Image (cartoon, rainbow, N blue to C red; front, side, top):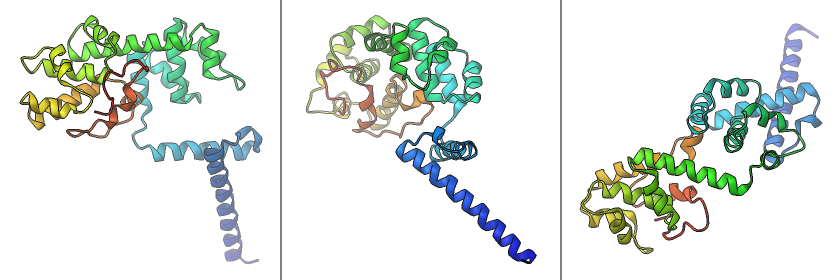
Length: 260
């Protein structure tokens, strides 16, 4: 076999190996095939390929931003989170561990040490006394605090409306609009009906489209969502409310349609 043929054979083998790795990585993504079932060398390559694909498919994935968010939300040092990430922990797992650590008042190292291949984060949380109800309570308290800080009001004001069953987004929008009009928050909430939208309320209050879009941005910043995981929100426009669907925290906060 001459040199040219040898080179061609070598290239073919390399391409074949890449195809195998890509196929296995694709299978892992689609079907959840465990990498422990693969030969070690192939498993490593497949895992690296999956990680590369995930980051490539999510260009706004940013460990620095996500670690900063975990620090801001749960008080765990950003560098600690980044160090765990470098050790192989995925950011979404670190976020769950940080929430359990915050709710249980335990070090995140204890939480991560309790996670094994045979349990899930629900099991881990329960082993530290963190039930679904406690998670809900903690998350609602965090949300109220964030809303109050961002909107420049007291947590008592936010909690008073949430406890009445108002949706977080409606509460935030009403508080925001009241700060720019001569109406109280209660009066503005009474203007919002099941058959109208916040854009209609803004029009009735004499608020321009430009100002309304700015108020939407301020509301968006105070609510939990994709940005809390380092993802970017699509820019909203007047009358749009789909980006706020995820903000409903329980079945009782349904005085208003979360899509309006």
